Length: 132
Image 1 (cartoon, rainbow, N blue to C red):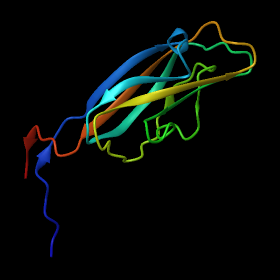
Image 2 (cartoon, rainbow, N blue to C red):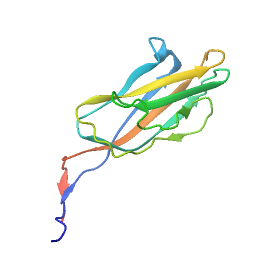
Image 3 (cartoon, rainbow, N blue to C red):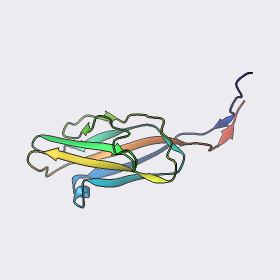
């Protein structure tokens, strides 16, 4: 028996959001990007724009309602001005839902901070074109 080829093709979709320190004034966990059911994150990153200037540490986790750090097994250091790649897990969102970000810091409270969350994803069983 041979492999049945899948002729469905789709371009990746991208979403991004700027996250400011002030966005966490209502709590450390915030919804950041809504994804459709069947979405599979294929890449992404957190790009610091202005350092989160907490005294000791400042980190972000990216996940969903089931696993709050699904895409950042090691929390992203947003105190440093370095891009942090998201972890690609192959997880398919079972239903429409939000990617959430969780902020944590230690030491004196940060007074500044801004970063961008960029996510690339595909949607299972979505077809834009066919080939072969």
